[in-house]
Every structure is written in structure tokens, then in C-alpha cells.
Image (cartoon, rainbow, N blue to C red; front, side):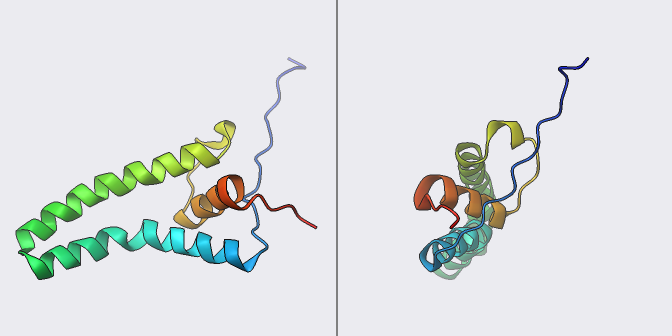
Length: 103
């Protein structure tokens, strides 16, 4: 009983450089709105039936991309928690791209 403990949750990393903040914002915006953007383009070029189909397929594809990013960047002990697109982008940029250290 004395060895049972609950591990503390790591907080979402804070990005310090302007370049990393911009990349994290772009990744977050892509995760949020790429599906709508591509569906509107397909609606404009083809038909709304194709747009609805591309929206549904894009919803599945963006969910897969979002889960791949989340599972590759967030520590395994914390993957059961819900994270927003901004938090996923911050984790991914801090762990895989930027490698910043707090000064």
C-alpha cells in the first residue's frame, strides 16, 4: 500500500521563441480548419455531394493525423486525458521540432 502513488501530470510545455509559437499556431489552425477548407474547395470545383463526402472522409483523416501527433508527442502516462488542438500543437512542437529549454 505504501508503494501505490499517482504520478503527477506534466504541464503543457510553454514555447518561448517566436518561430516555435508561429509554427504551433499554424499546426493548430491546420488541425482545426483544414477539413472545412478542402471541403469548400471541392464544393466550389465539383458538387456539394462530393463536398459532403470529402468532409466526412477528411473528418476521419484529420482524426487520424491528430491522434498520431498526440501519441507521438504526449507522454504515455498522460495520453488518456483530453487535449485541445492547441495543446497537441504545443506538445508536438516542444517535443519534436523546437527542443527549447527554459532560461
